Image 1 (cartoon, rainbow, N blue to C red):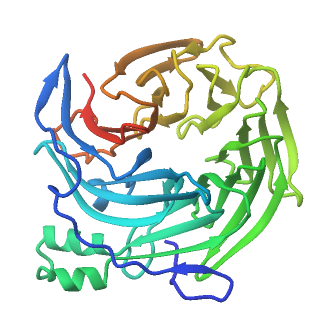
Image 2 (image 1 turned 60 degrees about the horizontal axis):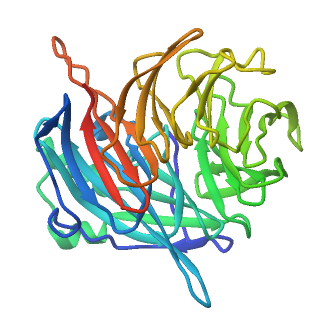
Length: 395
């Protein structure tokens, strides 16, 4: 596990927030138990800003925890970008979507849970890419108390104790450009950050030190996608508004360009998702509305040249946590789609159109595998201008 102690360092932009425990009735609304066309609506909520990302915690004791982030542009003579992180407790069987924590931040473009728990006391760590050029971290120590409470391991803390020992948020400004996307390597020791000037930064995270290992100009325009290769963490994939899809080898400094495809995408590349189960399969999404499947052994063209058109810009791709060949996609103007692929065969198996604005955030909840039980998967989705968060189960 990653050992990280938050300290106030001279080269950090450090923030410490006390996050109030918010009652579920104080923000938005909850709609539970509705079943339409086979889709079970677990809950819905209006967030406190334009919603752009949702992430279920990947660690077993915290599968119920859902993070959502927002971005709001305050226009005027001195424009500013603000946002917040909201943490929810999700229980699909009980129809529960309860807001448990919230913290105000700079405007957020992307969030990712660390694949490793922090040591002492073993809590989840959430990274965020901020519009002010900083990378922020939230150590969710209060969640440890929640788990202990549910397991009857300790006495329930008072509200004041929770406020004094909730989350620490620290961040470092890494660039004057906006941080647009973020991804952890598999060992949680470093992150790849895409920047609005087309650069990519590789940041190391080692105990109390956050350092920029490498930074280079990777693309001509905004870099919306930066993703580590899961099986080969020395490789980083990037995609940009310049329509280029690239791969870089971090063993060289500056990083060596392994390949760059300039022809496949007719518009900007929005997202890149390496398969966690197949070391040769990778998916890209683009404003041109196509989901493309690649074999990284042959990057001159996608495996299926036409791939599949999803009717909206493919902003986000999430592989199912346990089912190979199944992905959840956010399709901007055309809602959300679950896509199944096997070799050259690609098909949409389900669509979800309960949002009335740009579909940006999507994720699967990890499943608790109990002997003799099989539960329907749970999905969280969010949309931008209507600030709407939905949690639902597919057909």
